[in-house]
Image 1 (cartoon, one colour):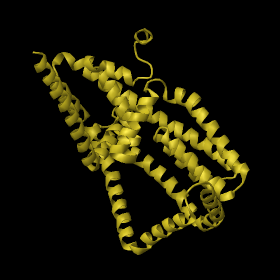
Image 2: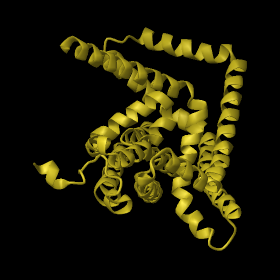
Image 3: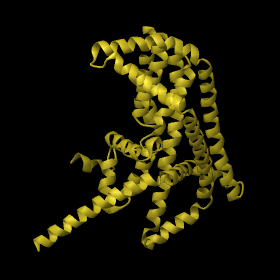
Image 4: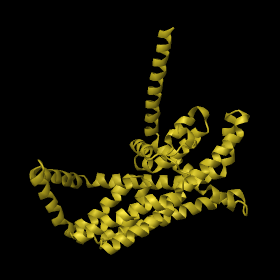
Length: 357
């Protein structure tokens, strides 16, 4: 009897490991299809409250179309601002490159003098990379065009998905209700309402937070004398969509185009102060009051989810990590057998008495 139980547990463990492996493999292979669809679902949850209000005055199909167009126009506005700043950056690149050249040489000398790396190693790496870029310009152009066309196709596809998800949301909800016994109908409707509230509050709050950070970064970096401070501020604020990692990358950009270009210690101090003050405001003032306690996820598990989804879907996965984790946590909290896992993902469990015991 004990042997049978042991074999049964081994079989279940092996099945779970194999199932998890093939599930992750399937997610990786289906990225081109699933990533735009998941992004559309998250955006639909964000725009749904507005769509519901618009439906009171006009027919439902028109309201769904208008809501999708609002999202599309907002996204175009962000892309236009970034493109405009990048265009100015490209025009100034020759002077920036000229200013950065001596700083890069100083950095190379520092590396050669203080590490086992030799100057020949650095030069060979640079020459190899330069040669590979020059040798196949046609292939580079082809890759660029292919990537651009793929991005544009997915970009437009997301908003088409948003329209259909909003238009036929009741149909999808009824399908979910029919999958479960009738006694769970109220629980499913309650869960779907909470999902909309959680994701909406997170992403709308995140947009407001990014706007505040853009202003904060622009003021600080502008006073510090950083070149192209508006572009760097916008990119640094957008990168906060990727928790923790985005802040470090944003600081790295400000450091490169601030201190390395000018070489002035005052600029470096200004960049450090700007990001320190901004991160303090984000963590202790903006985050609690703008986003609120509705998205109540443990920081350590958020980092794990960012790494996990990033390894599966790259940048898209890292951006979607927090909303997806919030969605899965909300669902698990409404399933008795999975409630303990949902509480594990929370920063503060719902039942505080339970956590203090």
